[in-house]
Length: 108
Image (cartoon, rainbow, N blue to C red; front, side, top):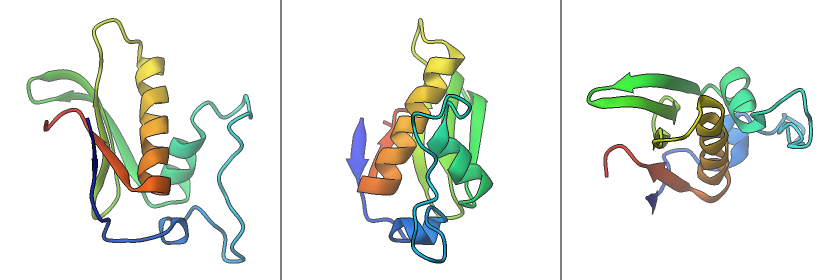
């Protein structure tokens, strides 16, 4: 379930997704060496963090957050592989960063 809320920080530049000259630092989604471009940029250059694993009664979840907000929280689906879960997390993170649409499948 996706929810909209106002983030504490605004714009991709504040999240490290643009360089100081204003150019986008987002890797190309077509780059085969980077299967999760949004996660990579978020963790390596955007000050974000991701967690994958057991969270309370949930056997497998994936969460992306920064210092202020949980941007995406996904629960692994019954037949979903870890790769598919990370692909969904990458897409949910992009929606959060670009459109302020936050996905939370864990807290309802």
